[in-house]
Image 1 (cartoon, helix red, strand yellow):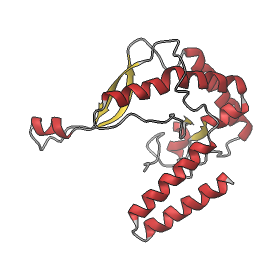
Image 2: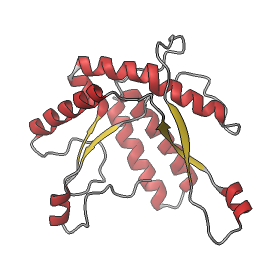
Image 3: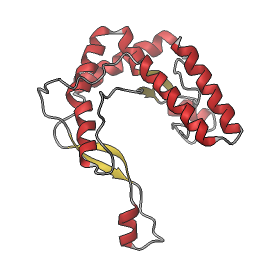
Image 4: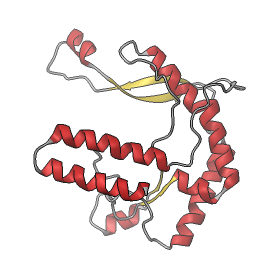
Length: 203
């Protein structure tokens, strides 16, 4: 099945990295990422969907300046790395956040501290659950999240691509690769010898 394929690709990528074959490893990681998208139960973008509400405004978060360079060179070298929303239009309403928290709390209570995330890099004190797992257990939550994706998230991604002259807008439908809900426990993290709650360094 798809889970067996994902596990095999993940192991192959590790082997290629140990061999120093990084280009080949990246190619395998791309295929592994596609398996994650195929597993997701969240809605794929409907390019014929008529948006009923305005999409959130956004601005780019850029890489920090290198103070060893002059200001003109810094401006040219700064890169857009992520989006943050601005203005009055929200991605999630307060009731959406309450629903997500309630679903996650229920999941964590049922698993009694057992780690259910598909990711293996974990810090003490962190609890993780994949959003599509929460939605699979709660049809009403999935309906709400799917609507947010169609009405807010996917149009926001499209708008960001249209603004970037160097990146062509995706021709096909957009989908969610993964989305993680993380609960932090600073006291457990400190008891384990860490400064506080945090995420491990990601690739």
